[in-house]
Length: 221
Image 1 (cartoon, rainbow, N blue to C red):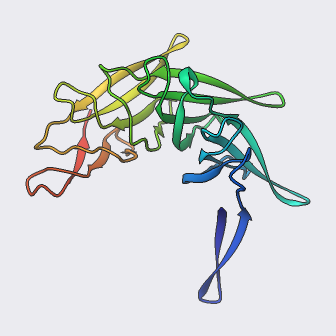
Image 2: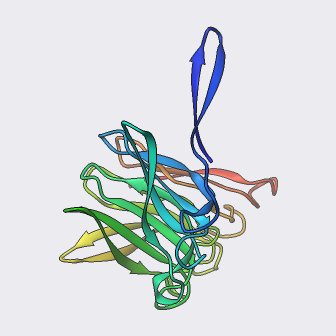
């Protein structure tokens, strides 16, 4: 389900906004929701949808309460499957990843672009053996100029993962490896990166490091 917690007289009150059925509306929601400027909520369901491979959904509030609309059902194959995590940019574009599928079967990055009457679904990047698959996928992070930042767990020269930037350029997207990790700096980069005002990128690695218990890392321009 999707729920809201509201502070009330020193306690917290839960309100269920939407309960999934596991059918065409989706099920097993992943990694929370993101909000647009109008207060609509967006998220992903790990299963369900028209092909039972997951879906992207929108929750909007109206006179009858909260209503769900499926924006895209993943079909597998080149369309991708196993979605997780969304981010939204200042223009209202919604971005996400899948852990499987795509042209190279290593997963994809997709965009849902606002259009008249709904959203247009576009695959903007196909992961490859060279860039590594994103699995387990997490949310991307959008910066103020529309570039996306993320982490994968299988890319880089040593195959311990890469922190990367996807930059829009003349109708396509360029993959830029910011840093390739090794077993001493950490791996299992299953995190959403954070950005500060200076352009530094922060994240965590779940394994290895000096004490073999993970690391917190920073990449500076």
